[in-house]
Length: 131
Image 1 (cartoon, rainbow, N blue to C red):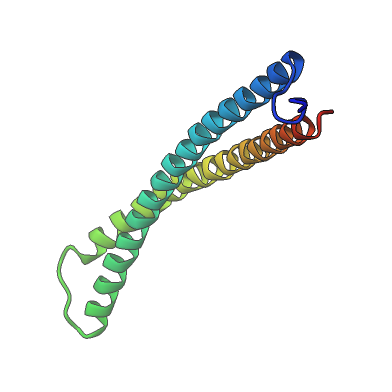
Image 2: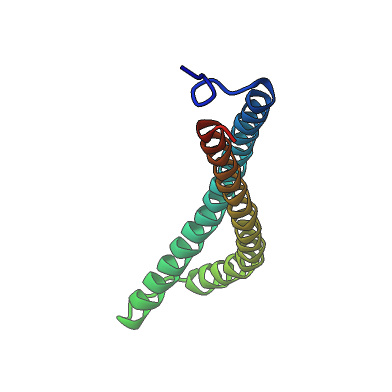
């Protein structure tokens, strides 16, 4: 009985090993890029949460004032809230750009993993066929 279909010859074994190592490296890189994307998204979410809280606080002050319930420092509070929102707008733009960039890198890494897995599968198929 021939072992050509069950045991790859040395060059095939080396190619198979190289392909498997390439998959492992690609997966490790993809995990890192995914972690970077999660971190960037968490920062953006934190900024969005702060902006949302400021918007709620501002809306509450305005709603309270429309009922005639005013406080002496309302104008100062609204001015500070508006200044904070303006400052956070720039941070949000930067964080949004960081998320977009990290997403692009993560998608490219995922494509690398898919390509590496496809190459490994081809190596396995060729070894099984004795090519």
